[in-house]
Length: 161
Image (cartoon, rainbow, N blue to C red; front, side, top):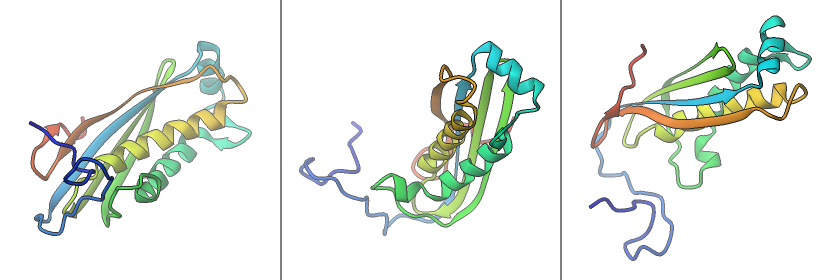
């Protein structure tokens, strides 16, 4: 049976997991977040080349996603600070949706799932922020881990399509 790792042996107090005895392995994770625009907002943005008075929406969101990845241990209390080998944030628009894919790599003793999830989330939040003058009816949804490799077990896929 699975147990929670971020609580003490009594299950009462939060703790950062001790990874000192773990092996250093190549770790990768792929997370995705989606943002649905109202149809009229999607059209307005597409017609404007995703430029708003705040700037190039997708470019700024991509940079924000990378910044989110790098700041994960400062945002999520029990995450370890990691020396990252790479981070790739890609944003595509399909009709009324922006799809954010965030892939993160490191060689370390703990995984990069939270970094990938944070990067995807921050990029989606940045799109929302940059477009909220057009509407507050945008919805960020389906933030999820699509894959991870390295460590005890692999999950899903971290490979690019």
